[in-house]
Image 1 (cartoon, rainbow, N blue to C red):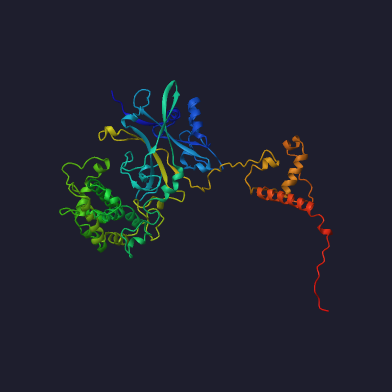
Image 2 (image 1 turned 30 degrees about the vertical axis):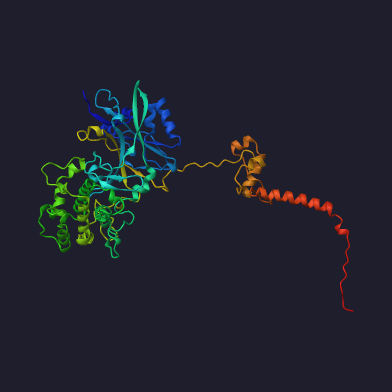
Length: 559
């Protein structure tokens, strides 16, 4: 008999989760564990081996260097209302996601992950972006939209997720590893994964309005050079860049990545590019998008009318870009689910289209219609709206589809983690199982003012003699101030009782010579000095009589 498979928080946390007034939320969400030692993996292994019931003591809580804090808190605690910030390994903090994959039946037994059959467990990092006309509240799902990271740890972009408990194609999967332990006499497996806090700079700065994007076309007066408006950067980074890549491969003899693109790949990528264009128009130019869906161009201003006409250029002989956008929007969910094109729906990108034809269609839209300039003209003509109180450099606030970093505070964006269980051999009948979201958190920067300070220890030589000091690298100096030297001199005369009780006074001030101990004399200099002294002694033995020798040389003089 088959049983439902579900994600739950780490098994040692079930008991405190069930004791809360609202247990379901914390019971279903993966837990965030916090460690402060470099040996945290060894410490965790010993903990789960000897005392797994103590795992609640390592649940992450809001903290600063002034008030370090960690451990489970009961529901209703003020700590749960504070924003959680995760610090970096350089600040002596390490964070793990902990969850259990179980079957929904009596006892919640662990689900076995059959790696040989292709089963896999992982986790995904999601960014919380404020919804349109809403102020972000990480505890209220109605105020934000989850964005998935499409890419890897080096580069990528944030993409909106239509359904939170789904996985997007190309989304970064972070690994989860198992850790076995015994609880109440039952052998269990904990699923753990490290949160990449050190990747904050990639996650925070990458996206539509990050660094200046590459121009769409290589011309001197390219309008994409002026990208102060983040909405323009959205177009340049996503739909515009995709169209440019297609256009560059219109020649079948072109070199580079385009030569490796098959016809099937080109058609699939073009479908997703059309989805990106639809998302952009719906978020940034809703009047044009509504007109395209209604097929009624009335009521548009001049800039919007020009863009509407330009989108009438053909993708194929029988289908325009406007018609392709409508058909793609009608099959959005099927495309995002990874299933085939719905039966009976005319294809936006026909299966007979070759890669060269796809590239020519994109090139025609860019060069023939100047779609980039027309998009920018429509954005400039759009009415200014400010839904978040922080206007962009051009006086307009970014919309929900613009860069998420532009709509968060200086502390950075909020993130959540979801665990994923995939069975690719059961697809498409079984979709990936995605857990509930973890507690929202921020990623601290490297120089965060609230970050704990990693203790630094510089070991002084145990042997103060020449042999002990000689073990230090050449060029190392020890400098001691006169006051500190007097303190050391006084301590040398104090008893252990006086030191323990703090009865230590400064030594009387007196004149003296400060000391600087240097170990920077090269060994070759010492050897040269020894050789020189030997030769001086030898020359003195041989020529000791020279000072007693009188030599007179005649000098001719005029009488």
